[in-house]
Length: 454
Length: 119
Image (cartoon, rainbow over all chains, first blue to last red; front, side, top):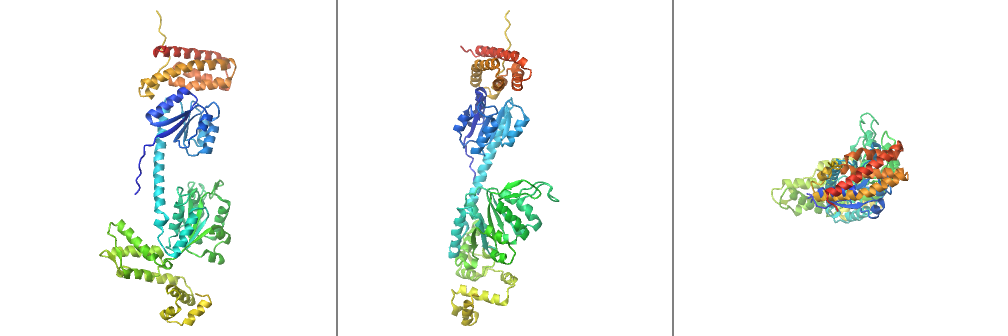
């Protein structure tokens, strides 16, 4: 839960007005009724010399003695493009107002009997926006804490420690990151951990699952479209790249992208700019790209299913997430972590994991990786009638695992080699033990090792 | 019988803005009174030197103060003066306009002095 404290920080306004009489009126109203702290300047030079970026609002008289209003706004925007600027003027001219609003001012207020009310409405809006911004920043900090590396990615195995090192390198640079790993290994968690611990943490994190978008919609989804670009495009829509702005776009399952779309993506990543579907306007891309796949992209390139040039463009810092079965005792650490989470969320006393349950967890293959472990542990928490989870509470979807394995449609020889490889790993390359377990000759295993088939 | 000159200013807008803060109303009245000699001198000198851009700026600057002080008789004149000085049309009207603005402002200055008992 996030608790937002409403702080009574004074609202800081700078009034740039060469008319001393009118400046007094403004200052009086701002201090008496909006409780603002007001700085006053009569010309641009003294104002710019004392420019303070901590201001909440700047009011400018349109007719200053030493500079045009437009030029002063440009100077302010060169230093800070966020402070709201309100132009207060005796000049009633729609053209000027439109021009200034296009230049990015917050409002254009006439000097008349309604000035005070209009100004107070502006201040009220800005204060509300500041409050919302404060809440958003607090939530972003909360998300950042949630994705703190040590809290979110659990593990002490050698394999995961290597991943930690790479993630830390990814956090401190802007390099493109490619994450590979089986389904359920936590690719999006790693992408979020990198984003929320990087300098872009207060900017958007935009995840896009390539497999979830039909091929004929993906271009418009990623790059946006203009009104009327195609049937059903009833309004302009910004794409995910624009949405990510200065943040991070996470392209999950990039290996599934259509080859034609790969060409378009490559061009956009090279040029760092895009045009919306059906449009001509060029939009600069400033977002960081993180991609993920469960496939071996190198192999996909060899098979001609993935463009080699895009592969190298996206490779950047490659992070391989090991499957759970290769993460040694992390299985138990993660299981205990999920038990803890379940107990916290359901207001239960902490459940214990029996030794036989731990052994059962360690022996299983985990084709669904961490996602599957979480489901298995949660079900066990539900099934136990005491505070102890034993082996009988752990139910694996072995049929589904077998089906998944068979879905890969390897040859019998490949299946055999994989089984031997798995046992060799499990028994620390103890050939005698493996030959006994699988009831095959030791010479068969040595031959496969010699032929580099296992 | 001496006919008392009608009040040329109206402080109700400032009173309303300040929520009836008489100290503030008095401060603004004094400030305006101090502005009058400078403003009238500027108008006169810019007119005599035909500095139209400066004249337009002085009129523009006075406009909001005249509005705030409720000097209704000058609200149109000061706008006309600014417009003529800016676009250069009907410049023959400038002399009577400037002299009227100066005359009214000086009277406002006198009335403020009297009303606020300034020595």
